[in-house]
Length: 186
Image (cartoon, rainbow, N blue to C red; front, side, top):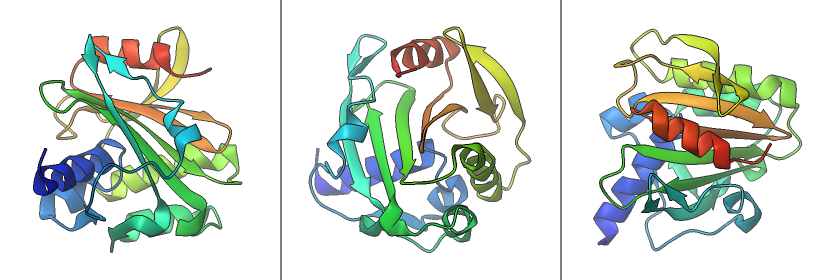
């Protein structure tokens, strides 16, 4: 994959992570260019390496490596009393052909009770469309569903909190969400 496609894929992953879909649509969000990122191998290890029978690329980046001028993302961290130095993100995605991505946002030392409300607020603030947010169940576990069909370009987000980490899948296919959620740690 060439450097341009790699950067575009990472940008899509950040959007899939719920990181400011509106910025992606306007081209305002990018990550540092370069090869694969592995800033947080422990966070990467939480993510599946296959989904729907397809091998996934797993990468991570530290907050200071991200380039964005996104007010919703900055507000997310500020509301938690944290800075980019406290933030890491990991993504698992297919190089092509799979309408799903799995990810994790870690905010070191964040209050777990405040993570999901902040995540929902950041996703909503990044969208021009009012997003549905509700409880749901996938793979026998309660999840937060953000966005109904057609509300988010990359599909519905299904998220859970585990300690100081938000784990999620974004997809247009619920069967892939079920599989991904079943592979995430409890």
